[in-house]
Length: 84
Image (cartoon, rainbow, N blue to C red; front, side, top):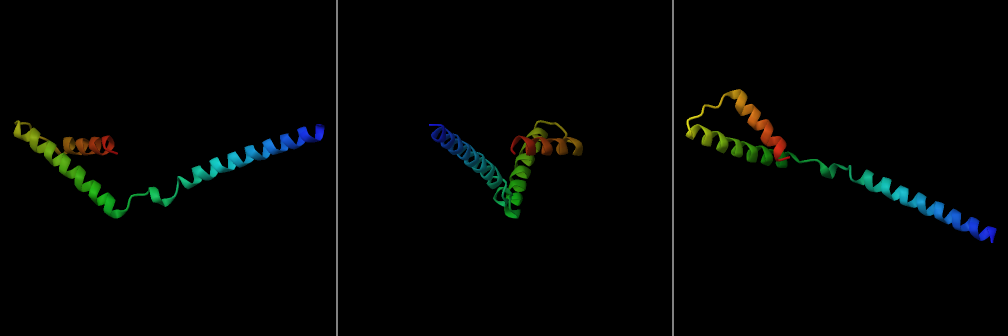
């Protein structure tokens, strides 16, 4: 009976090691280069953000507000954070 209990403990320990190894492998696989944006994707994102910002600035200026370079830079930063 003790031998059977020992075998079950060893089997459980092996199962835990396999579970831990799979979790590490899944995490490692989630960090591959496929999560990086390509140059085309970055350019498309920039064009989208620029169009959004230009529209917002045009709307504000149509209502008689002047947008300084600092305000434009702040709006650019905020939009890039909001849409990320």
